[in-house]
Image (tube, rainbow, N blue to C red; front, side, top):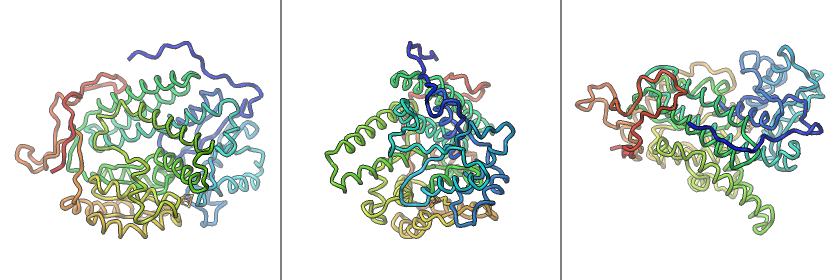
Length: 481
Ligand code: SF4
């Protein structure tokens, strides 16, 4: 594929910029998300990298400063920053820790004060904490604020798209590791594209769309047998714990190993919901015709357009995997958690669970940190939600680093999901590359489905080669019977 040719340049960083000469450390949340965030900083010529991968030491260090009352994600994030400090060559004079914050409805707003206290206690009080927020117009980025916000959104959409492609492909790969390989190559490509993208927004978008198209071709080239017998499990819940594989003990891969496909709620969902909450706040405070409302509407409009353009290469691949608009999520949650009275992830979890159930999911799992108030409220609602939606099995899993036998619990849960699958009232829509015939159907010989050879490139030696061998013209959505 031809790379973009243009005459624009990358932005420059003034010597007076508050982050000039610093190194920004970014904690790991979702797979791929932190890497692309680091690439955004580097695109602005600010040195940045992610904290070391979480491990037992993370919990040891985090545990030294927590009593057990704190949120589990706070313990992991602080533990990861402390691990960064332990690394050889760590220079506290250059270090800046990135930790977003909010004044929203839960304890997330306490993470920054907590980290500051810990750094004070261990003698590193001078390490600045960077908490980008629209409350101060992202002033930490000086002239680069607009670029940071817009590229940040594009990076969220792009990395969510790669994760969606990974989750819809990996359970069906015929050579273990190939879907992860396609994901890693695509993530590296995405980071490089963001890092080298120029200062012009249209030019950057074009480069990202080309990058996403290359990713799509890599995933299409993963040898796979798409088997409609796999139960589809929707995973919702607290954003950090559901997306961070260390904190949820790799729950998603464990489910896949037991023969399930996962539909995960991604990062963009939360951004869309936050915009909606802001819009509601302006409505309630009678600021419908204010400058704030105008800027909120403009931001939403621009974000929608960017999202549409970035996902376009995957539209056919994601048929049957469409994600709900935030209004739809709020509408579906309304009977249980009225949006005018409730703000928070519980509302998004409940609304998304209802959406997935109505679109043919075979089960819903809610992942939450132990003692998370969002998880507790959602769990109280799920029995009623399940009753209203045909009896879909919904189970909450809480995590605090002390799980006993997760595989056993997931196995039991999947049996319930398989049982529900036989009687569910809501069919799932499959894209044409699935074969929805039952495995026992004559001619299928109990092998699950196998795509016609022309539909798949089974002998692609190099996943980076974007040779599309897929019969894209024959794609159509099939209703599950
Ligand atoms: S959502 Fe739950 S775990 Fe996350 S910060 Fe809020 S209370 Fe803590």
